Image (spheres, rainbow, N blue to C red):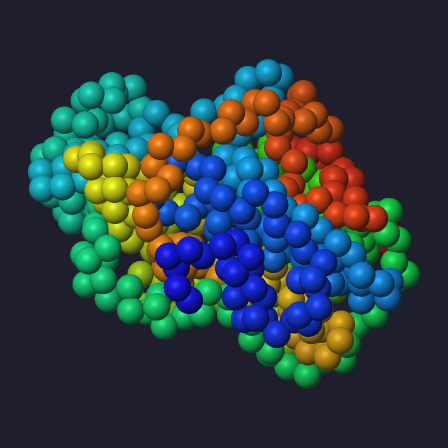
Length: 466
């Protein structure tokens, strides 16, 4: 695909063709604006608009299958970009996106980005430096300068922390993991077995395209929770499963819109039993554990697809399902740093300091693509039968964003002011103001049927089976 004058419509059509879904739905999908509205040398808005449009169009397709009619959807470029801003307020306050010790640090020979939003990641980072949480940022920066990037990267990674050494695109291409990522499809949809097609209960358009579809959401940051939130916006019963032993960050307030939320301890036998009870009646299972982490518990995707015929299992990883980095911890900011984006963006702005993209587009685009892939697999299941495993990774999405092209045409765009577009949502955390989903449907709702609630609010039972 020639990226010189690429449009969101062309990108959407390319995404759609990868999933073998019926082409006629795209005749009922409208993209408005179709221009970059975010300051970046990369087509960040195009990535947002096209992936949201793919997900929303798939929802229309499933609604049409259930109701024997066509549904239309429209996605505006500004609204798509805003949805990727991570902005929300709770009781009038916008929580900070980054914890005190997260961010880019200068090392003895370059830069390293550290993700310290979780306290346990922060503590491991500071312990390596011989410091604690009372340290001043300047003291941490001075201590980091005593290490080379590789030295500190190996120490942080080896001790269960999360970081990434700054690389250019060329340097990333020399890393063995780059070849492993390039060999993987953007969205992998693998048929696991020949399970019979499932029948959904009668369709109620007032409750959304995915009403009566049950989805288990075993994810935490940020792509996976976005996937679950989008499916909830389309009417699915999404059950967020959190461990009572693990912390969360404040983004859970916004990404929990529309979801049920329960506590399950997967390290305990009764926790595994509770999960299997939910799986018995689930249609979609979304998880963001590192590759191989669930195998020891017997709840990896392929095992579950055989155990629960017709299940759609969706797996998210940071750096793909194969290669030496497949089990490496990663988040959007780290993937940007590791794969060359922070250097390339800085070069476009003629800056010496590394520069992040204006939004966490790897997280958001991957989340929308997860929702798209889950629905594409669900459509196949309903029409052809089978159980399916859908796989995506932040690093593969990063490669896709890179392939959309880079230019200096939109560097001077002004960041939209998201406060102007916030809407009130029901919440048990307080007064929640957040941005709506950018997909606007005809004759289908785009809202959240349930309030955002704290982890563990609900029993691990589907509400219509209680």
